[in-house]
Length: 100
Image 1 (cartoon, rainbow, N blue to C red):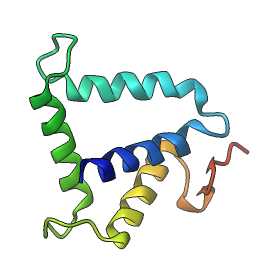
Image 2 (image 1 turned 90 degrees about the horizontal axis):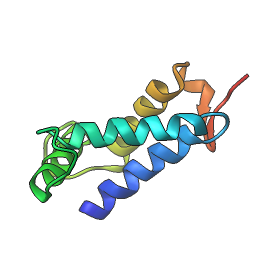
Image 3 (image 1 turned 60 degrees about the vertical axis):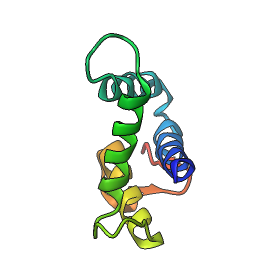
Image 4 (image 1 turned 90 degrees about the vertical axis):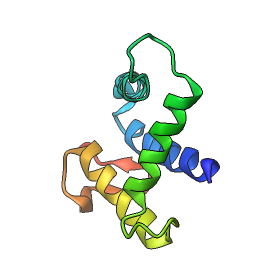
């Protein structure tokens, strides 16, 4: 289950980092770290890490059945690509966001 979450996060990161978005990778990691470090002590405890990933799973599992379907995964990924690109979904495809 945790492997799926890590793969999902990596997929989103990779798509956003490609095609001119590499400079934002550091900002992405910083934001991700800040979301996990809920007590702002500069460290992420196991409890903080697990809570962050549990929330992520709940965000993807839109029908709250405790499972992520391919459709839920695809819909979540598309929504994150749209957020990442700041463009319409058609502009976000395999290999990252179009920069033109």
